[in-house]
Length: 458
Image (cartoon, rainbow, N blue to C red; front, side, top):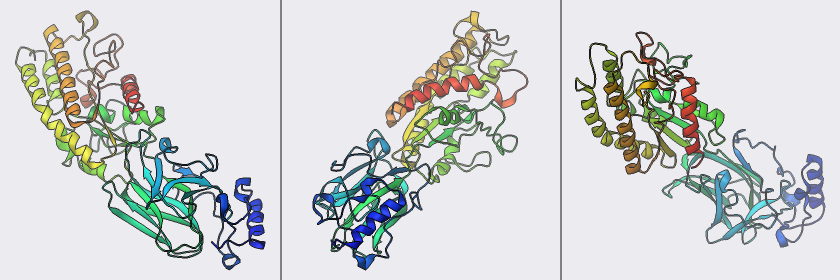
């Protein structure tokens, strides 16, 4: 913008008052010293100085930074980290800082260093500081006197350019950039902008969605009603009462759950169609926004746990004596390499999401006096509980090997196991079908509480 005084400056102040903007937006125009730029020249009197509060590309759930959150003069780097972004200078410029701007009625703004002529870099992060990506962001750039002099460039996690927008208008220009996997952006002068630029009203999605992969212990099995199309249609039995969906209700860090888990799934379902549904990893990859968290229960069906329970339930056989449990223990050892590959594939799908592997609960009481299963012999109960513990250990080792989180829920049903006086598990009987031996609502709530504690610690 051209540094002129006079009627243009008065016009900016009057416009600020008419719009009801805060006094910070009415800084007197000056010579450009101490962060006070002059109002735009009368040559650009028709250019828009303000825009509606809601940016055209912003959504209600987006983070919106107006740079009125900190005092004028504050150097900005990690102050917004808990809101999903950190700033730095770019192109050799110093740390950006908050400045008043007489040319912008939504002042204060974020200026590069030196004042209005330094490049600005924004990098999207988790509250922990870990890198993340977004699919879009928007910001206001200006005041632009020379179209084509400033560019907004977006980069992926590998540092390669994924999108670029050259600001080809005058005034305060809203810019929206959309591309998958945006990890950072830079706003720089491409050519001589006579009075420089600043940015304001930065909006972007904050990755708090959770994608829940896995089997029946993540789908919410045994908790009717099931989602339309997942009941009799394909039997995936996804329920709003499943612990992944409860997380979105109870945790401040989880906004929404993308429920992908399907009852009966093995690790095969991650890379192959299952019950008519697209492979789970492809569903995960096709999410428009990077999820903040990816959870999964998987491995129980790989070792045939449902078949083992059926064998143990049959009155004419003893699953501890017929060798079924002994074979299952071998299968548990062998499943480690299988789930390690699965965990690795999830990490590769969304590299910046926190991957949280969830184990399985122990289904039977530890003491014989606490269980009343007519079909269960003492050595079967002990063998099944031992198998559950060994599977928990193997899943934890696999998670540690792949560098992902593991949450043990082995003891979440303690005192409320199958055949106890106050069971939180759907009973094993002649009816119930695939719902049998799955946590009911109280059991789902118990699992959700343990998983939520871990997620909120990340």
